[in-house]
Image (tube, rainbow, N blue to C red; front, top):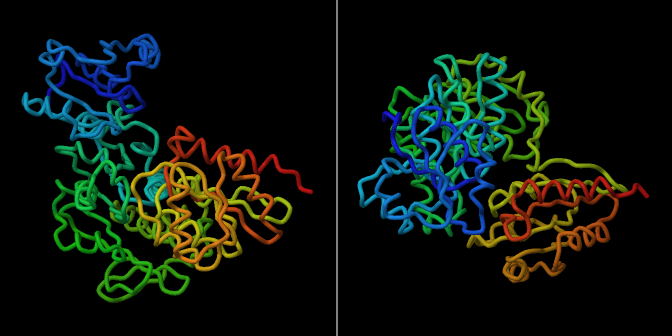
Length: 454
């Protein structure tokens, strides 16, 4: 779409919205930045814009005249697509895009897109590191915290863009087509937004909607949703598995990763030769191998980066040993399935901090995954009573409810003995107590590092 001279409504003044305005302005469009939060002031939003970038700013409500002038709508990921506000523009025949579609329209080069309920950030970061070791011009963008729109205009045919893409962002794509995509897994999450698992899975599957057999999609053979989707995926499928030997694809056998072709397996590496821990990270590594190999990176280069790649912050991140107790920050475990991976990675008695914002998740499988490791469960936030009831139903009795994060941490310090672990892996989002999981994880790390040794 030709954007020059078009009036484009950008909905949401967060990081994605600001990035979209900046890209639109430099593309010659006339951006109108709208945020319905009436507590904001237009001057505050204006200060978020880079120097020299101009946009009309409207707070609270759009007038009919302003709506009538709009030729394209760009939604920030946090804006639901099924609201009356968005539906009004659909009825007017106005295209609804997200930041990902906008950036794709503006960008050049090779695009790699990675989605899934869990593991996106680690896999995207690892793929970015491997590609950066192989290519000169690599951008790591998207849900990982760097808006795609901020790099798209500067991209060239030599640029490799590695994008972490959420289900929210995939709801608003149109022509977006990566050369290589990956769906790491699909497990219950964000049902307060997508309403059903079918809707949620369909959003994830959209990452390869426009691909053909000329492109590649990497899928997890051990996830029921992705395995079923593989039968109808429009792209060439490359599988990975942590539970069985494959005739084609990447798989874990014992403690070694193999690549198979036509039934012949080639040993690639021992999982203890990398710094990442846990089966979830073995799956992330196999996915990264498949993605980057499909991009033409030699396996020796891939393995060299994997061996030295450090854990991503807030994802089963070892913090410190204090008074003989091992502290782990898994604040990015924001849903039960992600938190299952966190507790599975523990190999010692564990005092676990859980709870937070209620995304309408169920916690039975998470509690079952404790497998006798959790000696005390400390719960906080909106979901603490719900999780406590679930834990009791599964026979766990040592449960503490805390009113604040500081109180929860103090309980952990008191209950953990030398040789134990303290794990922050909440199985819930941070909203309500923290602005995001990063702030929650950083507070945990700060409190750990402030502990005295004796």
